[in-house]
Image (cartoon, rainbow, N blue to C red):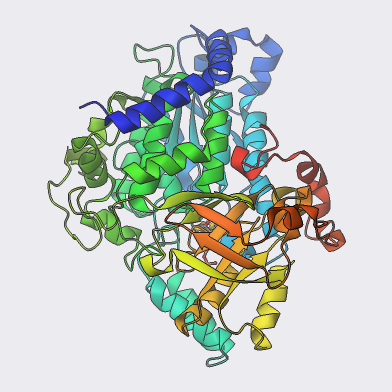
Length: 606
Ligand SMILES: O=C(O)[C@H](O)[C@@H](O)[C@H](O)[C@H](O)COP(=O)(O)O
Ligand code: SF4
């Protein structure tokens, strides 16, 4: 079934807009693709260095021009619960490659930051930039030009986006993404949030808080809320980079290992040496990207993807805009209720039918492009499946369930949780911003209240502790944009604003910074562009100005005479404290070179 005419029209608009970038990109990808093993261009010295530590049999294979070599890019470290399982993957992948008649080598590693560890800490000011650094680091590994295909081991927030930018940059090679899967369910996310609010109100101590946090984040795997990391898994599956059903299988299980083995063999099967050559830069096109946006809306995905997906698309020569994302939101219903958009977690989502059920529902109603290429072959309908462990450690697939196993978690297009998707663009005399409405109650979609100005999230937290945040207000937290201090997530403010909102105060947040994908219940206009550091209108708001945030009409206004507002001098902020410490001095070039949030907040594209 072809995609709904509204989706087809937006896709066609993106194709047209992308031509100046996409056509030269595809020409580069085709020029770089090799008909033989890519290593054939290396000299003997290069090659000898490249396989110096391989086994004698592997050296013979790599000295020839028949055996494909698989490059592994890994983001393993012990800091991210979601990435710790990757420690054992290279050995599993090498064995599977050998069984498939290929060779596998770790081409290189990339850094991976845990936004949970750095949330509210100075390190968070490196987080967004780490995405582009990850792309660059993967490029260092792949620039050895020893590889005929690649697998990317990554899960979390900036890592998958950075790895996809690398995969598109090396788009002449096939690319299969291999996830590690979600942590098993611990303390429910809403209970964790409740305990945090009790701590913030001084009603419990640090020991009780740490006990609750540790029951929530308790072992290997991705944190179970539907934040940016799990939005990444959804995207990699719906855009065809994962094998069908790979996203939400827990680490350390036989099925998880079976999927990793299968992904390895598939990556070796789709090289230029075989008859299913699938270079990543040609596999992904505008339809794949639109399918990603559709998945974000249908699941209530992370606001961070209004930047990451823009940058990921642009790395393939595809120009995606906030307008596209916002218009698709009007077309795509919300089908999933996973925290912060509900009480369930991703394990419950998977048990209710998961990605296979979601994709089958959306395809059935023409809300996805089926005619796309994937690492598994032609057509997205092969992802409308349920995955199980088969015979002898293989992967078995059967059609996705026709009905959700839990209609409170996964619904139908006919009876969605919300008629429109989760992410909207807001425009007005403050510039443009994005808001995630899938986690905000409808009665809170419009708010008009006086501004309270902060130049730092700790200022606002202190004001809360001092009892100064009374009545209805809209917090304006500015000088948090990419050029100011690296655009940190201000997720710690969710607890403070959540307490005030629960007390009955009408509150909202406006910022040129970001929120976590796990933020949700407080109306927040984020990624405000242009940022305060660039003299954007947000810098001309004054304490007490009346502001109207209207997510229904998609507007954000300061209520003031236009001439008076224009005549105001923009506020300035002392950001010297953000230039040093915790490595921030190393990222001054990124702060100087980074583009705007609506262009993906990247140092690569403007
Ligand atoms: O965008 C995201 O999904 C967040 O960055 C997430 O990865 C981060 O880890 C949260 O901060 C975790 O939530 P808590 O801070 O509430 O534990
Ligand atoms: S989901 Fe967030 S908190 Fe959890 S491991 Fe990944 S980056 Fe860290």
